[in-house]
Every structure is written in C-alpha cells, then in structure tokens.
Image (tube, rainbow, N blue to C red; front, side, top):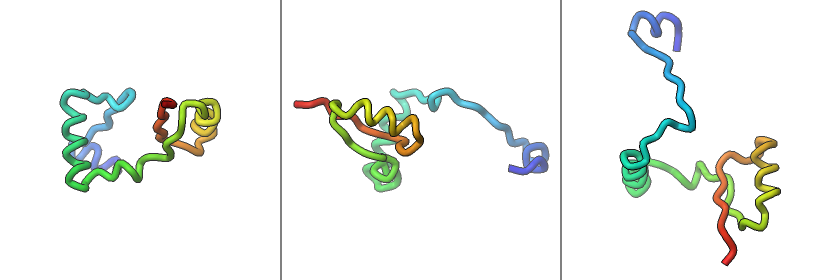
Length: 75
C-alpha cells in the first residue's frame, strides 16, 4: 500500500490480536470455503504430531521452522 492510496483512496491499516475472529461467524464460513476447495487448509499446516512430541514441537515453533501444527493426543 502506498502513501497515495492510503490517503487518496481512504484506505486504513487495522491491527488485530490473535486474528480477532468471531468463531460462531467465522468457523462455518471457513468450513464452507474448505469444502468448496477455496481454502487450502492442508497447505497451511506444517505437521500433525502426537502429544508425546510436544517439547520438540514447541522448539520447532520457537525456531520458526513450523507455523501451524496439530497435536493429537495418544489413544
């Protein structure tokens, strides 16, 4: 975004905290987009791992080698 478009087109920068989502509104929409093939959830996922690997997973996050992980309880 350029300074010209910011002022001339009335654009604004808006921050968010933890995505600022409204789950009751957003989750059904995300599911719908995923089912329609328009939200590639699998491409956003770094890995799926068992809970027993939680320490290594946290290290991966801290180092920046992982972004989104699913932790599956044993069982």
